[in-house]
Image (cartoon, rainbow, N blue to C red; front, side, top):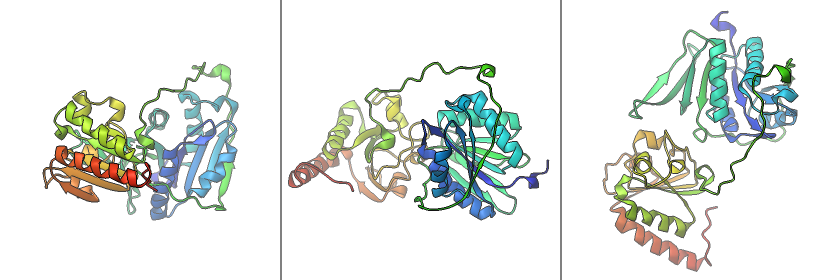
Length: 343
């Protein structure tokens, strides 16, 4: 098969219990830009059971075509059954680019499909572009401990594939009434032939901070000095109604649990307001928060890289600045009747 026989940008639309994962909608936004540059249709593909009603939502978020495979065996995610679905679609329609969300299921599926299709896969991508002349996907991600950005190409195989981290791309505003093609493909699957069985799904009901959904985040770095000083961040966060996060150094020092780490090896976040306190702004951290709506940096070093991405910067000692901010916000809360709105 020649490389020129492959055309189109495809997005794996991950869904759970009939609800589309946010990263898939974000990828439709990114895929729209790539497809327009390459002058090809943008397609989303759905795999599951009773999923046809989701097709119109995918179109409203930018897709021109939606392919779907609906079968009872596909009700819950399993590598084997989902991979068969993707292989059927990829081999029949031959897209040149397939993007997956870098979720546990997305990464698992993408790696399995790449192996069977004998093609390349770039993992945990944070930037996407295309070389229009050579029709090459330019998938970029931090490398060498986050010290450089590496752009990875798949020159000799198709489809070109990448997994993309949640929250690094922007979803389009859904367009009500947008029209497109919806195509169903049939697949032959038997539950008896599946090598794995889903016996039970247990949801995580632990009550812990969820950075991904936080509207305001206060993130501290190793520049806070010690755990006692780090408490200032909790006091500030409580005052303004924020969630506390930290850099990799903070987590490795034991000041915070890993689920509160922000950056390349932690969570990617897009809050309305992001306070970056006493952290330098290394690229492996910035990649996890650069899409925040408003970034406020506090650092003693006026040349700290964090100021390059900050909307506003305060040069000074966080241990002196935070108590003053706490005092001012407490006064504001009193004036506002105890509530601060970030609408």
